[in-house]
Image 1 (spheres, rainbow, N blue to C red):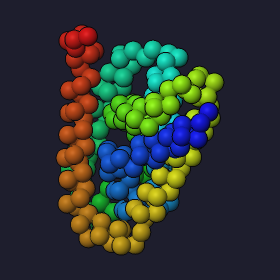
Image 2 (tube, rainbow, N blue to C red):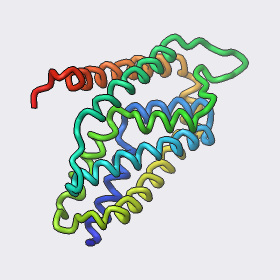
Image 3 (tube, rainbow, N blue to C red):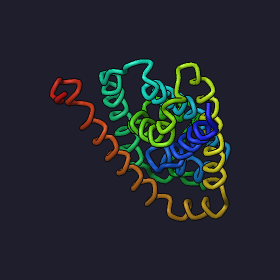
Length: 213
């Protein structure tokens, strides 16, 4: 296994986490509104989904297994409704008073876990980033290299999560967030609902057999 392949897997994992999307917006609200500990719990749960999608992407790239679209369409439908529910709650959120955050996630680890495994951008983004950065070393890609590639990817995920938690939990970011909390939460809710529509739009044709091969 070449060093360029390992570096590619690390960078792919790093970029996968740092690319803005639904999880980034959720972490912004949780970390800035409830602190670094809540943000760290969220990304810890989300890490399960990161590893899942990275594994499937690498398996697809290596070619050891062909993955059908039905599973991803079904997940897209599920996560579409889930994101719509989160977005609707954010749009309707009202101040709690007593200096409490507008949106409080009681179980951030569980939220991150569910978010990670139902992220509508999980598989396609993982496949795109890993393909761009590791497929160039195709000759070195073998099924027996998968555990090491996942270990390196795991390291990339951890580094990216540490970067995000450090930034989101910073005092300046938290003060800005709390000063504009209602606007940020409601705008995020609208974006979540937009992500939900996108997920449903892409998943429904495949489940109904309307998508052309």
